[in-house]
Each structure stands twice: as C-alpha cells, then as structure tokens.
Image (cartoon, rainbow, N blue to C red):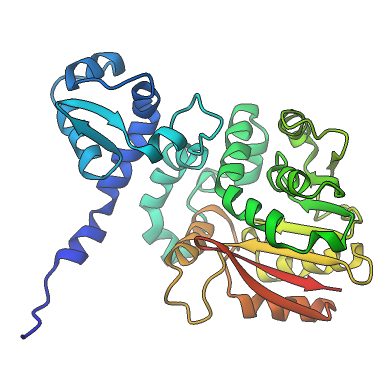
Length: 336
C-alpha cells in the first residue's frame, strides 16, 4: 500500500491552541469545581457559570471531545482526573500552573516569533519590567506563582523523596525552594531529615504556611537570601528544582559552584528540570520549556543531562549521574 501524506497531524498541532485555551478558560470559569458539586445539564451548568447562551453547549461538548468532561443522558460531569486535579476545593488541586499559563503565558507566547528573531524576553520585560520582580513584588501574583511551582514539581518532588538514597544523609535544603514543596515531600518520606528551603525573604510567609499545614515546622525552616548575592546555606544535600534553567550559562556555572562550596565532602547536589534528552528529539516538553525560558528570561535555557554533568565536573564534583523522575522531568545528581 502506498503511503500518502495527509495534513492531519500538521493541522492538529497548528491549531492546538484552540483546545488549550478551551481547557484554560474552563479552569478560569470554574467548570470543574462547579461539576464537583454534581452533574448538570447544559442549561443548568450555563446558568451556574453565568455564560451566554450562544456557545455554551459547544463549549461543554468540546470539553467532552477533548476528554476533560463526561456526558451521559445530557448530564455533564467531571472525568476522574479532572475531578481530582481541577476542583479548586480539593487539596489535590494542581491547576495553579495552568492558571498562570492562562493569566500570563498564553498572551506572551503570541510573541514567540519576535522572541526568536530578537533573542529578547516577551513578557513584562517588554514594558521595562522584570519577570521575577513583577512576581515577587505582588503578594497575590507571588502566591499564585509559588502554588504553580509546587503543582508543576509535585510528581518530581515525590519521586526524589522516594528514590534518592536519603538514608545516607541527615540535612537537606532546597535552593530556590519557594513554598517548600520538595522539602515537605522529603521530610514526609524520611523521618531523619531536617532542613528547609532557601529563597528570597518575601517568600517566607508562604513557606511557613505551607510547611505548617503538614505539621513539619519543627523540622523544616526558611532561610532568606539571594543566591546571587548571599552564601548558600550548608547541608548534606542541596537541591535546585526548576531553578537552573532560568539563568544563562555563566549564571548556571556560578550557582553550581556556590552549591559545591556549601556542601561537605560526600555531599550531594540534586538538580531537577525538564531535562532534554541527549539526542534532542524526544522530550518535546523540555524543548518547549526552553522556549518558554526565551519568553520569560533574558538568558535562560533548558539543557541535556551531559550538559549538566559537564558543568558539575567543572565545579569540582567527583561524580554525577542522570536519573529519570516522572514524565518529562529528570534529575542530575552530583557528589562532591
């Protein structure tokens, strides 16, 4: 049989933003939170969400076709996944990153072509702002951002907490640890571990609140500082999760070097990101994340495992290894 090319995959990818924005708007409108209260027909759901009659049914049925809702006997309901992860009232709610994508990134990605031509960020920086300053100076934006980072990293955090050889160590600090997502998972899974997270002082109240919700305040504490200006706190194990990709090559090397200085002999540095596969053809999420660093930062980029291992060797780490975590995320572990 002769294979004839079709445009199906091209069109699906090229118009993929249709489905993406449909999901993001559904999260913004609270569709999944509303349906967590119980199934509803199209008219009842439309009224509860205060939507115009014109396209509400198409909107709900598009979510059915996209696999985000179920419909039986004209009653709409959540799927098992959307019920667990997209209901704002459940502790398992993980859409913080998607809320940020809807509120910020969706519009900024419209300027990707300009970013590719200029090499310049396409976010708040275009109006003379700074991404991190804009986030960290606004308590509401900061809370949303820190929650998004926790959601984005939860699977990787749990894998690190379960599979890294923590029995060999006693202290741990997460560098750029935000509200303490990784520190909490490590402490929950390893009762001998004490430590905490190091981040800008403004993040302290959010860390304290999150850690206290797990009753871990006696073992985890917040260390305030700027990792470019201040020394990194000392511990047996340090981690940088979704941190290194924010910075240019010189800054990456500097942060790794500062971590090396803070570790004891035999100490470990865990670096985890959506690390690009060695052949740079399979981990599409990691490559798209690197494009997101173009949108968001002046010099950030994602990288392969061998890239990171070479930086660790330059800083003086005697050995390193790459381990897959979950989904697109992997970690590189360096031993001093």
